[in-house]
Image (cartoon, rainbow, N blue to C red; front, side, top):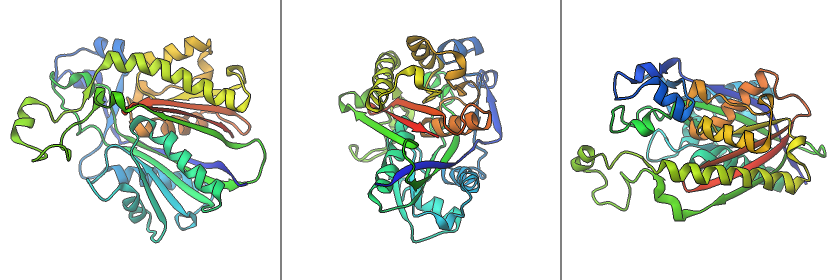
Amino acid sequence: MNKSKITGIGHYVPENVVTNKDLTQYMDTTEEWIVERTGILERRFVTPGKDTTSSMAAEASKIALQKAGLEAADIDAIVFATLSPDYYFPGCGVLLMKHLGIAGKASIDVRSQCTGFINAISVADQYIKSGMFKRVLVACSEVQSNLFELSTRGRNMAVIFGDGAGAVVLEAHQDEGTGILSTHLHADGNFAEELFMQHPGACQNPRLTPEMLVDGSMLPHMNGNLVFKHAVVRFEEAINECLDFNGYTINDVDLLIPHQANLRISNFIQSRYGLPDEKVFNNIQRYGNTTAASIPIALCEAWEQGFVKPGSLVCFAAFGSGFVWGSALVRF
């Protein structure tokens, strides 16, 4: 059976840096309030007319392809994860093909929010294992700066999220004990409305009204306390699951890259396992929560900074809206 190996990694973030102090111009908040609750110091916002979800993915993908020693035409399929597509339809996968100058390949769009990267590489991994595809480009990208309201009304979510993209190339290989060792995916729709964006949606007719704009019901909603309580439990469950499945312990892991949801969550998980700082990679301080893009952006930076080397055992874990959660274990 074929196995999947990550052979190229790339990321792109917009040039526009938005600090916590910048946000105080729009809402009743302080830098201390934001840092205490999230650990975030700054985030990136797109430049209108320059950056889009698909264009940022293209920039990250070009880097990943170059590192893999491939041209865009060499890939068999694209798996694209985002909650903030350029258009309501079609999905961003075909738009990424357009940016890369290719056509006729398979395109699959994934909607699993903060677990987007893990779900996307799992989908790609299954296609490679089946023999259907040999090379798959996984792209994750988000434009969230124009999704939230920069106001006191919207601050609980607006201060958390940022924009950016990450991509990896997966290729088939036969080497035993390397590549994607396993992926583990879960969901519980009983909590779907605890972290969601209701409007515009097909449940409402008309899908968007002036009243929604006035009363704020078109804004994303999050039950922060409940999300935190579930996240810390599901993160640990997912990490344990992939370690147990492969016969490893947390001490065997060279690096844990959690979804960059909140630094408090990452620190809690780190303390639960007693991991030193050099074994947990966080960059939410500089980028905020970039949802589906957060793990591949962090992976790319971890590789560039020498935390991920050939032979490294790396664990990815994520939790987010749905509720969805999952993990992956990869030997580089």
